[in-house]
Length: 192
Image 1 (spheres, rainbow, N blue to C red):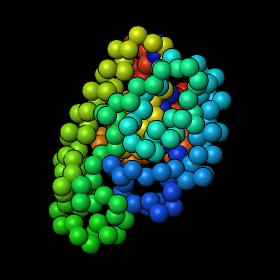
Image 2: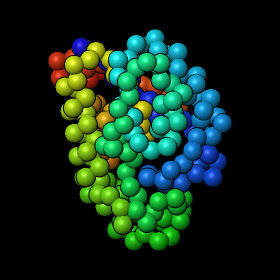
Image 3: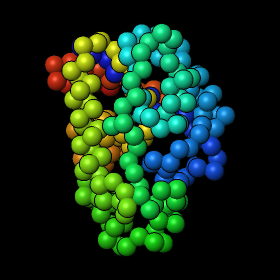
Image 4: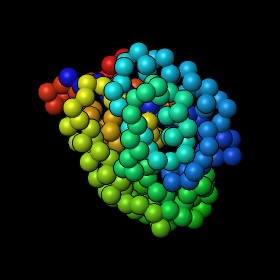
């Protein structure tokens, strides 16, 4: 059995809230730092042997606050949030004002077909997250922690629960949270 600690980065600074900030280097807010500090003991209680982290600033700041001392960290670019391209940094209403009706329909109804204008195709994003997950399972450790973003976590968790992509928002963990999963003989289970 393998235990995986999924940690979503803390709340970001006020000027970034509500915006699509996939690859944007947004710092944590004071409350986001407090959320991460509050997780530190819970994370330590699981005795993770390795931390994996997105190389984006908000994830790195979160890692520094939740990390168990003297445990190795690996910064994996596959854990980056999706690149929203020309929609980076915009509010949804701003995106709705410049997107075509078809882009909005595909995003809502067939997200697996979405290609963000000037950004990343969802298929490429999903492929890199899925590749990370396969490699994670192969790691010869009993407990690992993953510090990353909402989109990455939705992809991982919805896959483990067998949810279609269009329903992945149902499993979005809040910022500054810890979700624990166990992998045993090809089956993923959420540990409350």
